Length: 481
Image (tube, rainbow, N blue to C red):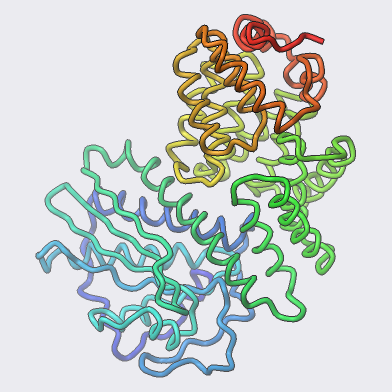
């Protein structure tokens, strides 16, 4: 639902929007912005991955009935539907009611701008204020799939906000988070706080919707259902089987809708990931097809952060490192909470021979997305950059974390072996090499590895790697040829 559509909805008779709010100070403005950006980015990442700029009201959205009267049971509940209930004022100060109501209304307005969303107007949502009804009943009455609510406690310049997302079908809490800020720290903390909430919400919703789509799959599911299933699989911990499942769903979506930009981005993203993670059995063909699909997608939708992210990784595979940097920076400019773009930008900078410039980017990715199911890749990236910078102790700690998070990725063992050898722990280094060989036995020498990963041959990177990564691998006993 667009902002204009929200504004045009007539107020419900029982609506209580509270007193006219006075001009709000800097605290309310920034706090509202924190929550708006957090929830909006998270919802957008799931509802419209990758989302478009032009918001439209979902054609399948049912009309919401008045409180106490459920929407017709025959009317389908759109998966992208939500109501933002009035946040609760915990300040014990009635004068703060305007502050809390403003946050609720601003959240609703911002969510309404998301393409394909169906968001209940605030005039209707406010009729539920103080009623204490459960999410399931509210969902039935309004015909929505999700309920977002929370509370705000403000004491002077200190503000604490709690937010939760509930599945209206079964009253199950899908996600909850809490954060506190002071006015002095709000500007500095805003990006990290909102980013953490947004990425967590994105992951939780991707999982939840993926499960719902699989459970409720009709005889002939549409392209959108397959897209949601594909992204749900993509966000799970990486493995060959899971990525194959994601690709199948994206391919099916493209068969149903040959013009789908989102399906092209999904397939291209998986193909690129498969090449980087060495899951691909046809590297040249997969690289060429990803290039074609992503160029087609960007020709139609230049403002897709996910498309620029995938293209950035693809350009690195093609050893076009400066182009990779440009694409990843574009992805971040379009979505400042795109943690994977920050991580990949850090890696690209490392392969450009600038690991110290890359480390803050990867650290930002971890702060944004500490609960990513693929957090192993983040720790590996940070450990690798530290190793190339000569920080051996930090590299061992981070690469050990990466191995614990996902031992199925051979290159983690590889980098860890080099780090351990540089520390003088040759027994553990040899063990890590054996673990790498068990996962990827075809990587038998440094020469073979460079052939598999040509971006490792960039001269500025090689100068640093010869003193660190390659020196450690040779010390661990890994052959040159």
